[in-house]
Image 1 (cartoon, helix red, strand yellow):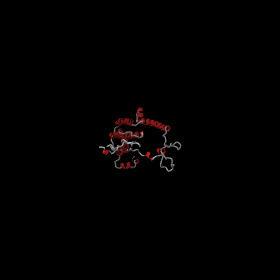
Image 2: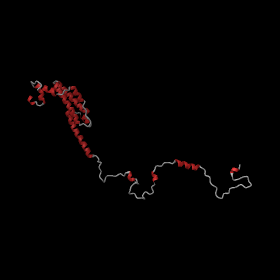
Image 3: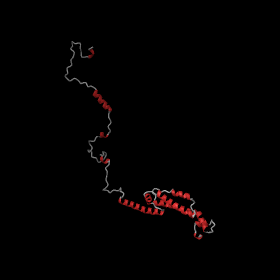
Image 4: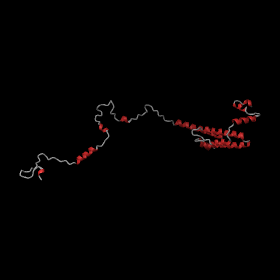
Length: 234
């Protein structure tokens, strides 16, 4: 048996006193066995979660890896009578973890089928997963994604605002094309309050009309005390 053990394991066995097969087994277990106890392994098993965008079979393999470590610990540390009970318990716990935390759409389908063992759960997952993949592939074939590329005949050119407005700065514009266009219409309207007030004042101010030509004005007679000079009529 020692001749068949090679590599680092053979070098490690040199540090132990080997008399029979039980000594070889004990030395290998002390070197390569997992140092975690059954309680730590159980906690790690029940803490596993099916992550987002994770393949469902990867989640199943993580559960099975923890279960194998638990089975190895039970086999190496428990009596044959206790092994039967503990193995059945942790197999049921592993299946419960899978059914509880497996994401949709396989999660609800697997819980509806109610598998009894991990092997049965794997078989159901394989069949249902293949059906889902087939349905997705048919959906993408029947509903292709629209492409953004268009041919030259199908492409529509949307006129911009600059194409609808006359450009007065083009060099090819004829001289008389926009002859009647006045630049004052392009300026913003600013009310002239001074002009408005002046016009209103002129409208209120009374206008005195001159007498028409030929109008006879009465003049004082030479013998009268009245005169045309208003300053002397006092």
